[in-house]
Length: 356
Image 1 (tube, rainbow, N blue to C red):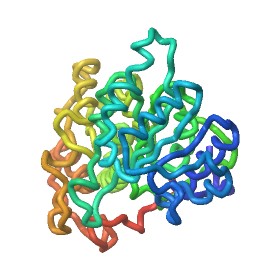
Image 2 (cartoon, helix red, strand yellow; image 1 turned 180 degrees about the vertical axis):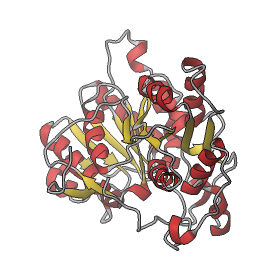
Image 3 (cartoon, rainbow, N blue to C red; image 1 turned 45 degrees about the horizontal axis):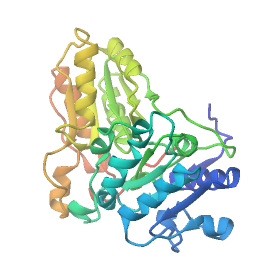
């Protein structure tokens, strides 16, 4: 467990370090993606890799489907590619290769073939980037049999899960929220792996379970602090992997608290939060004292304007008020000085960045 003397680095440094260590350990690992060799290095996550590992770190043309096919083909002959997209939105162009080949090859050949491929996808919100550069397509990808989907929230998990993904023999979708890149936390220098498919309790509580992933874990933790002032002890669970889902831990927490809030930085309909609620209904029937609630994006495309963004993205106060409703307490208004540090709603909150 971390202590005050242990090293703290940012989320993006953790990804960079994990990638570098994987490249150093196994010559079959290579990195490819539009912008991986640029001066900004995919938000700092690939800086210096080209200079250190040469031709095993390469830029690629704007031909997402074709290059995904190249990565899949190389994985079938023993390579372990890390394919990177600066926006998850660009991945849409390569869904044919991901869904019809990467996800199915192992099954179509009776388990004799494997596709050890990692596809990094970056999601985010705000900065006026709008409906074609700010989507979260995690639930779409998680619905495809044969794919694993991880969404780490902390620097520690970003490194451990990326190394696990690279060493996994299955295709793994590795989704990063760009608002997390500047957060920091305890990260060991050595290589280590975190298990794919296992959640983590970020804060223990007895009154309500709040389940989330990626950036929404931070908002959930902040909501838990607000609820604590009311004497409500919320248990915050970070899924870390949305496929496979850690069903056992979800039911275990619900059995303890008897209340459930599912929080997702994606759309409500057919989304991750819906899957969590469905699981609780199917395997935790009779455990809940209140109707479970979903906190998600509304079912519309992502807005571009600052004015609309203010009302679009769920915040800690929305999670807090959903829980307060369960306890028959009135809602609280959002206080910018408390919730967002007085800054805009569509840029990362620098007052809330760790350590985690």
